Length: 327
Image (cartoon, rainbow, N blue to C red; front, side, top):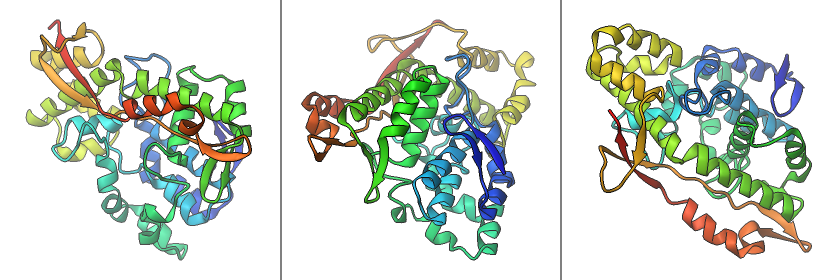
């Protein structure tokens, strides 16, 4: 199977189980799920899919010699995302704005009810083992450590948002290696540059004011549509386009829906004012502290650069916003 990837270029994927999983409905649905929620009205030209990211995580793990089980775990880790990705954490009661992990909480049940379970079984692999992320330290680690998931989405997001050029990408690819089940930069300078890039992505695209508005306004639109029975909960696990099509047919007959639509499409001015606000919300914040070699020793960036430890502590705290819309 020939696959063209934004980071790695032309890739030949030969493993039959991987090829079959990529072609499955569960993975293919992710082609129509926006990676960052509802990106285009807020950051034009930067939208890309959960499918692209999922295959990307697999490619990082394959490139660095992970087991087939870990590669599969990376490939399927996001299949439980609903429409508009983390926006669902602002819709469903089970979601949590400050953690944004609803899809993680339902992943095992979601996979077991999907065709993925049968595919994995046919190849003689243990699905329960694959679904236990404790077995796969390259694929998943808690913040602020690096893992294949975090590495891929940050680099891919940076490329799509033009925050990283091809030379910068090559610098990362040349310096990022695996040692003892840990992602490590060969040089501290490359590690610090990547950490600063991740921090900018977090400040602007992950937990910034504009992204917080996106999460909240899309969440409000979906929640209102559920309350009005324009959609049902099961619709949230179709695609972005299918959900919008079902809701948008009610736009001209529902002025409240029209207002929410205008807000989520960035057509209504807003401001962040803790003294005069309509909505208070929380947004998950992220930061990384990569391992790297410095003066011949393996250290964290926060050990090499003490100021980074201060930034790290601040950026790992959820961000609070107080929104006031003009209408």
